[in-house]
Amino acid sequence: MSKRRDMPKESGYDAWLHYRRNSKVEKLPAWCKAIVVHKTDEVLQTAASELQHGLTSMIGQQPKISAVPVNAPFIALGTFQKHP
Image (tube, rainbow, N blue to C red; front, side, top):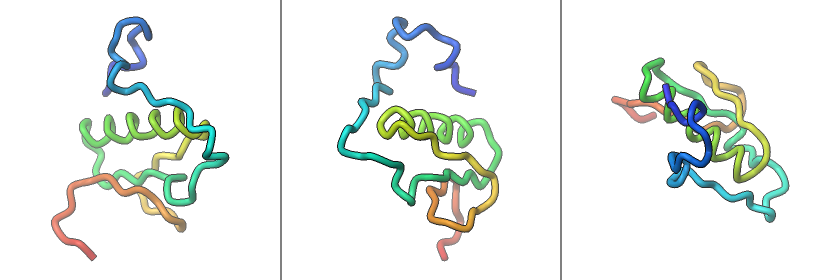
């Protein structure tokens, strides 16, 4: 799991994760309201958390993380052997 939340902001760890709020975007676009993680391994969970953090910082609304596809557009994270 990411240690980002355990470190004080002044540590410099967030330097490469500094996402500025985009004032031109008023609400979370439909395609990024959900992040679906297709495997439950540490790397993908960390990637999902970092993506969620970045989108929340830039847009001001937090996307949901799900282990199963949702009935709406979503961002898919995983290692895929076959493409539909």
